[in-house]
Amino acid sequence: MLTRRRRGFSLIELFVVLVVISILVGLAIPRMHGFKHQFYLTTMISDLRNLAATEEGYWSSVDSYSSDLNALRFNLTPGVWVTFVQADSAGWSATATHDDDTSHCAIYYGNAPPLPPATVKNFIGCSK
Image (spheres, rainbow, N blue to C red):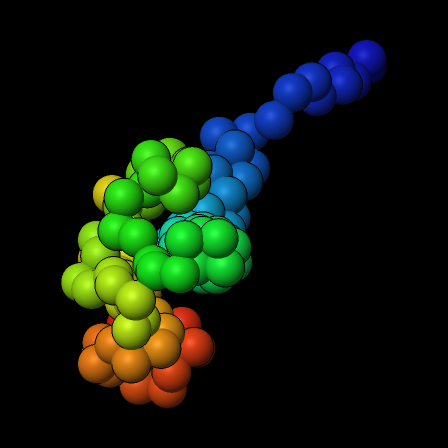
């Protein structure tokens, strides 16, 4: 008598594979959210650092800080928005936000008052 060779996968085997894949995806999605949040924070911090360097260059030639990004010839990363709170000859302060994230970062220089979450002059602080 000839025995037939089994071909393909049984329904149970396919179901087990789907369950394993679902578990792996369920573990990966929360981690991806954390990576995206860190990416948004990094872009805001980077833009504020670049803005600080640009402001210092502007101050060395004009003897005042500016709140006009066009005058500074400064381009923001897409999705990042900078709001100046103060910019004059005494100092400047600004906040950065991202379209896709609820946190924000801030910095202040010179004699500008502290701007939470930045609590140390010349250092960027970010909310969670």
